[in-house]
Length: 77
Image: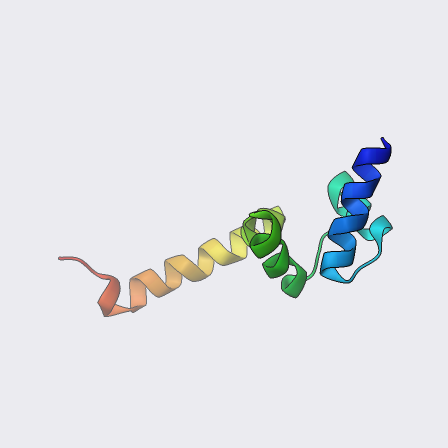
């Protein structure tokens, strides 16, 4: 357990946040903001999209679908 807390503390220091916040992310009781999601992707390799909730994923998919149907550069045929 101490090793886990040390790793969380090191990550928190690298991201300039407090260790309890990292713990909350890991427990799923909080999610990092967009800038921290980008930093986590760079530092840990966790894709920023992995932090999206179901509603956010649905919004992203709706936007992708809308762009795909209106942007002629995306049509292949």
